[in-house]
Length: 123
Image 1 (cartoon, rainbow, N blue to C red):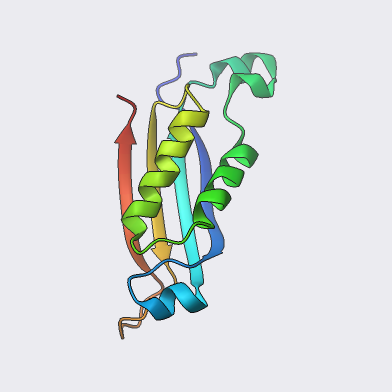
Image 2 (image 1 turned 30 degrees about the horizontal axis):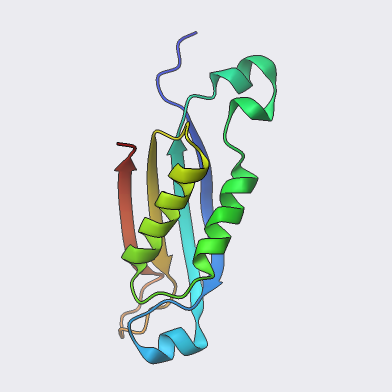
């Protein structure tokens, strides 16, 4: 068997945070939805059934949660911090796709969320 592509995923994680350009957004906070995938070779975990052969999605969640707890004006900045922290912690991570949406953003639109998406690759 040849692996074409393997990823560790977190899908639709809902977290509360204090991010936004308006002072009111940073004062009262809001809910955010995050989905991310980390490209990595987890063939070792497939063969051995050992966590050491992959990236722990529980640990990924803890990193995301810690970065989401730090207030910022822009979701672009938060997304960048999350990706940098994940690359730092997991040297086997080759690429990350991250989507970060603010639920019910204060812009007068009837939408489920607005935010950013980023695809980054390790240099």
